[in-house]
Image (cartoon, protein in one colour):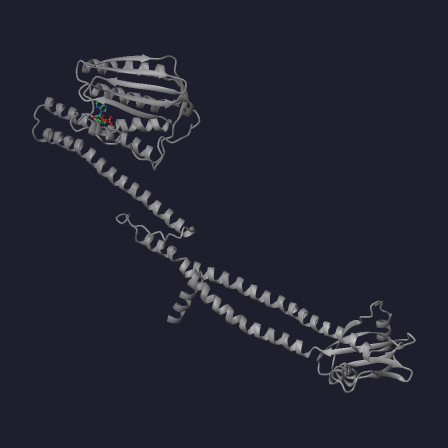
Length: 498
Ligand code: ADP
């Protein structure tokens, strides 16, 4: 069983990146080496045989100087007392054949006879070869022991210009030995080279995938509570560094979303707890202390008010989550923003009167836009209700709409409490409420919706305020940007919630 486990472990390794990298490197390297070996042998042979041919060409020239055809037959003319000449002639005579034009041998060396005297047909064929410079042809013959000889065969003339057949040769034994030695040594070296290159490749591939392994290890260690883990960048500025950087960036984003989700759940539970506690208190009062039908009714009515508040929170949360996950898609259509603004201001007259706040509209007409009507309505409603909510009795709120060349500028101003400067950076954050403002009145979500809607339409929102004197929200919507993004989500999942 143990052996089987070992085999299984080894087999699993063969699926690894390191093994496959090494394997492809080694296979490529081995093929390259084999190809070099296979191609190099004929090249080496051509060089060696070329040298032999040159030597033979020199000897061919020499033999024509020393050998003359006299009336009594062939004779070698040289100075017998010159050892060098004697040596040359002896060497020329070692592999040698002389025959007449009909192919009848006149004189030959023993080695040549061992190679086999050329047949009359072969001789006639060589003599028939047009060879104006009389350099002879190169032929190859093997002796009975298998040793290869290079032969140069051609014409020899006597004084009467009669043609003879002359062939001289030299053994290629040394050259063959060099070639064989090279081949044997090369192919003995080959497995050693491949083994060394495999080790090298294994080592290099191991080094190359270290970041991949640490990436995997870090990824394994990551859980909801360890999102701070990052892999150090090696500084090589290569693909793996790029991978590590991308991974780290992904971790940053993951952490940001995790933090957001955590914050979100804390906020939500906090928001839901308060009305629930109130409802519970009211129901307990009804159950334990109410005696008359009127008392029951009162408790129920106020419980119902808080249930309504809960439902409002849940609706807002649903919208919030839809916007965050990108499920809220703008449904764009063409409508007149001026009419919508005027209608909404009209609708707010009654709540304004109840609160003792006058509301006026200064609207440039017409103002045709292509936008999400429901969301635009939500945007204006939120701003107007805030203006009334945060303006004391006797105050004034106003909506101003300017529809210019590229932009729609919608301003909602009031003469209310204003916003202290330290809270200004946060008012567009979800669930953010200015503590001194009436804590029960809002969820702290209205302005974050307003900001999303403006941004989803390609615009933005600004605020000018003076505590105690009033606030002015300026929404800018670029008309040109309204049309093309018909299906753009109100907010991408990765965007911050403010
Ligand atoms: P809420 O639903 O609680 O009003 P918002 O997101 O609409 O939440 O507003 C966030 C905070 O900004 C509020 O708590 C309030 O203090 C402040 N705020 C918003 N509008 C105005 C305004 N017109 N005047 C003064 N303060 C405002």
